Image 1 (cartoon, rainbow, N blue to C red):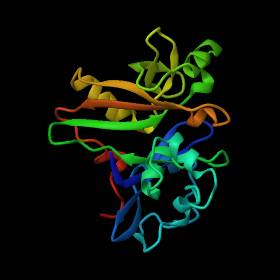
Image 2: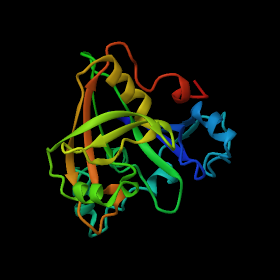
Image 3: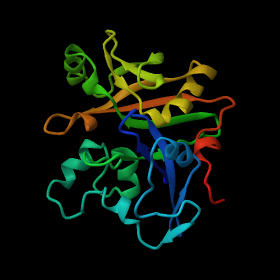
Image 4: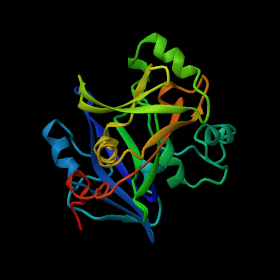
Length: 242
């Protein structure tokens, strides 16, 4: 993962579909640009981000933009250590590192942040994400998810008939319980890895206990490789401003 580049995704509440809409880079300061996925999002009702009203503007700031800054727990909070531990991060993690794992998710809105996937010189990659959709699986599967242990391997399966998104990447326990799914905005890149090479696998990093909500309960790490595919380039991820 490239923790110096983050993407902003928007969810259509009606279809539950996610669209990458913006890109945030930490260069000499911070830079935000919309990406091509925002055009598809507009077709289904996206009205724009209040902080970034112009699609064709190159936004720059010496300080992290408020939209992202407000999604990071304040450094003075007494529960910050426990929060970072739930993300499997050290106490000195910077805002970009925190957002790359936490997703900056809030119960009250429809945005999520995720890091740019990167391909190493030997074609391999590593990404982490919290299990999506766990509340939609049967109770027996939820209970199985509650028993997951750190380092426990989990299965990764391409789902071709998902009622919400058609294509999905399903995460399963070794005893065949459907635990949930990978985030929708990672699917095309993960599917490319699954189709190009058999060298992919996933494991549990953390299984956080209540009162942490289910959306941040099971942290998964997936590793794999691409032979030809270049992740998160072109298509929805292409910046509207070069």
